Image (cartoon, rainbow, N blue to C red; front, side):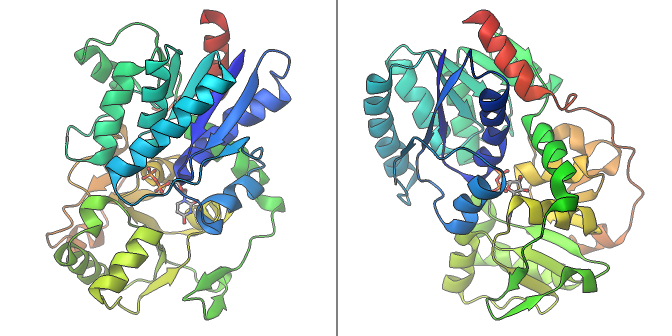
Length: 362
Ligand code: UDP
């Protein structure tokens, strides 16, 4: 069968790496993949580094679409993908997660009556203003194959009357986490750059928190960002902060001063991220993916949001939601016991189960 895979943003490269590798190494006689990169994330450290380090095949098509507004971005991707799908005549369109590229891929395929598979189906934050939530709901309602990471996701779909071709396959990020963690020992880790000025050696830091921050709700108001940095400063612990380009831009435009305990670094590659995860004391984030990776790495996580799609991570204090606009540093400093970490996210064979289910049904 001919698979048409749409990716565009960092977390999608990390998920797609699994299936692309399986197609190349295990299923090459049954599946051919056309890989399309929409261009949503295109910088060296948000895109290229993942293709290089994770050995993802070069995209067959690169659409160079990186509009700032959601409507323009989704619309332009939709137009280009429709053209490409008409030319390529795939048997199935594969989309991942919850970005504008996901929705545009699903919409284009749906109008052309091409079956759609959605990986990471059924996730809900139940907050409709969240751009990712809009993309998830719409994509799930268009998809023909729904690959859910958890029982909760299956139930969410059931509540929206989506019951056909719904599979609980576990979380594809666990496949990536296990596979690349296994390669970490032999990897020369690139030095992580601090403020573009000086390199600093992680080995000299023995206790630090790992921070990422990029959700729209946390990066549009100066007040919210001020509150977050003020709280983090009170932790009195070094914090390593790979800064997402969107966040870097707003920090600059608001003229925010970052406390000196927070070391801002450029976004890092996946291997560096796994190394940071392994070495850190705790994770503080608003990322969906990182909440789970903290869980896989058995690190305590604090999520700077009022809700999470990954509700399983909240069990046993493994993950704690913090309202970014309140005084939350005391909650982190309480050092509440956490764990054990149960295996809610499948067996780490998600990629294979997805391809097998597709081959069986299509
Ligand atoms: N990530 C990375 N380098 C970074 C920040 C994140 O490799 O500097 C990885 C992270 O480990 C996870 C994924 O990117 O696998 C999460 O992406 P992001 O937070 O951008 O998106 P979300 O998961 O919130 O949709």
